[in-house]
Length: 193
Ligand code: SF4
Ligand code: SF4
Image (cartoon, rainbow, N blue to C red; front, side):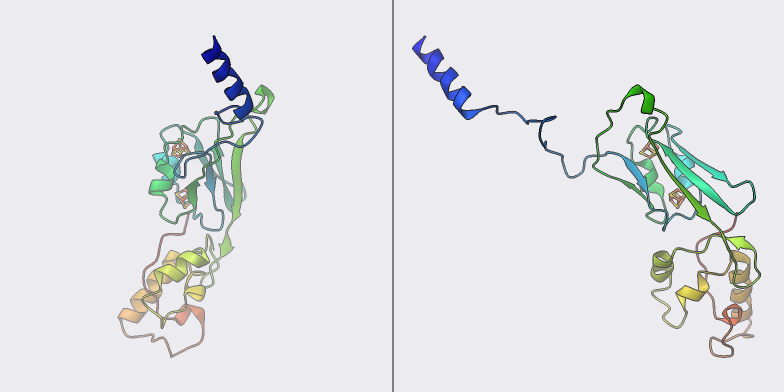
């Protein structure tokens, strides 16, 4: 009995050994797979995440007037597999360590991550298109410092291909003109829908 009381008093004085959650913070492992997020600055609307999502949690819809698209993640359908992050070619998709998914029943249809991304006119032909995200263009053209990623990223794939052809045929050089369309261009990620 004396041993039991000793342990009892010691435990009462020391307090609980377990995490105080939900009344306080708890431990979250660094690599825990929690809520999926999209960085709209990097998303190109390529649809790879949608096609690789085993749970059907990602949807991409084009705006009715053709001026852009909306990408949505239904958090309640997401099974946290991280496939979207793995296959996203631009790094736009990420899996955070946010595991707080408890919610009232009334909120079950509101738990979504949604972004609407608008197209811009191509600097060459005016066709509406998604420009290459600035950070991605910088990376793509890092090995070709004579090309201006900021100008190239505003050309649609057709205009980039045409400029490729002109450059390869020796018609255009990087220094013959100041216009965007006449710049020396190399290949880049697809951006047209
Ligand atoms: S895979 Fe990445 S870039 Fe492509 S639509 Fe999904 S989030 Fe956007
Ligand atoms: S983590 Fe898996 S289930 Fe969730 S949105 Fe990404 S691909 Fe879909």
